[in-house]
Length: 305
Image 1 (cartoon, helix red, strand yellow):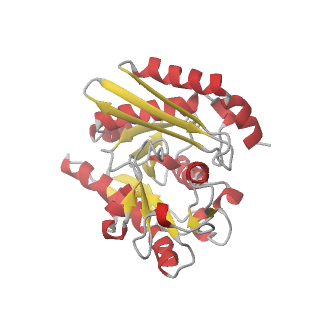
Image 2 (cartoon, rainbow, N blue to C red; image 1 turned 90 degrees about the vertical axis):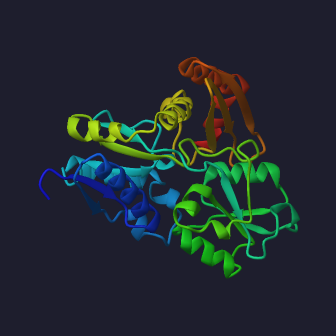
């Protein structure tokens, strides 16, 4: 396809939805597009915990390698999977309009999580969910669950788990809203930075791809993403895919509210910060300072031992 923007994606149903939505928006502006599916190690190795083979950053890394080989022009990511610091040769050039950023509770018999008995097993693969659930529900067991969205729902319905926690955005995009029992508020279970936002990554030197991504960017979602990722970046290289940290920014008129959570793995030393402001950069720095003042650096040392 001559002069087509090659859109790189993983092969899961959700990843393909994201790639097709990106393609639709680009085509509406007159761009030609082609979707290229990349099979990643994380997709092939579902028999082991994701953290043991590189975490969700592995999905990003292998799409970045396809960018470097000039096999694709744009890599489409769930922004929450993208490490807070990416190599200099790449740039996050586009941000699609945010879907519902909340986490959703799914339970086979539609029971609320508060009704579960002691020892009930909750499935999640995210460290920040694990820690926040431990903090709020110390009587429950939190267990690793892997696989795509449909696989996780199937395992819940087969009663391998007494409930699972998944991102509402992914469920909505796949037409699976009916599976949701309830939603966690962004105060009760702070989402991952970038949750609900589709991020478009390209080579910094690819001006055509950068301009195309910018053309379909949703400005409020980009501002929220910059704030959330900015808080993570206050900690430099101290964060990895196992860090139990969550950041969410909401925008109401000219005011930005940033919520942040950082903890040890079992939620016993949880830090929470909430700040409002109108200047994004100042707000990001203030949230970082608040977390550090509460002991964030010491907690991160514990989590990386």
